[in-house]
Image 1 (tube, rainbow, N blue to C red):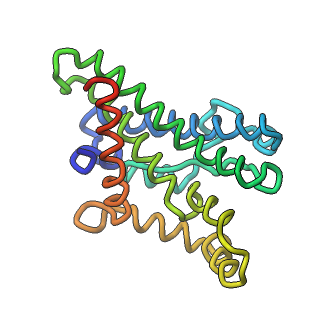
Image 2: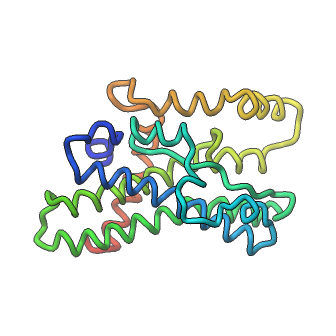
Length: 222
C-alpha cells in the first residue's frame, strides 16, 4: 500500500489531495513530534528545549533543510533534533522522551484514519479530503518508523549512542557519523528514489510501516 501511494511531494504536483496530505502531514508531524518531546523533557527537568524555543507551534522552529528536501523527493523527512540530555534526564527518561516523538506521529496518523472513515463513509477514497487524509496518515506512519533508524539526526541514532559502549572504536564511529556528517549523508542517499524508483532505506521503512498501517486501519474500522 505504502509503496504504491507514498512518494515525494514533487511527484504529486498535479494531484492536489495527495500533495496537500504529504505537505500538511509532514509539517504537522514535525511540529507535534518536536513539541511533545520538548514538553515532556521540560516536565522531567531538562529545560534546554524550552530555552531554545522548541515548545512552539511555529514550524520554522522545527524544520530541518535536509529533512524538507527529502520529504519533497522521497515523501518522508525529519525535523531538527530537540535538545535534551541523557545526563540530565537519566538513560530511561531520555529514551522515553525520544520515543514520545514518533509515538505522537502514530497518534496523528490514527486520528487521520479515523477522520478518513467519516469522510469515506461511502467506501470511496477518490475525493480531495479522503486523499489528503490518507496521505497525511501515511506520511506520519512512515516518518515515525524512519525516526527509529540509527543514523543522524534521527531518534534511533541518539538512542544508539546512549546505549552503545564507550570504547574508542564506538567513539570514533560516532565522530565520523555525526561530526563529519557521514551519517546524515548516508541517510539522504539511502532515502533518494534512485534504486528502481524507491530508496533502499524506504523499502525497509515500507516493510515496517505496512503492518502498523494495517493495525491502525483495523482499529478505526477501515
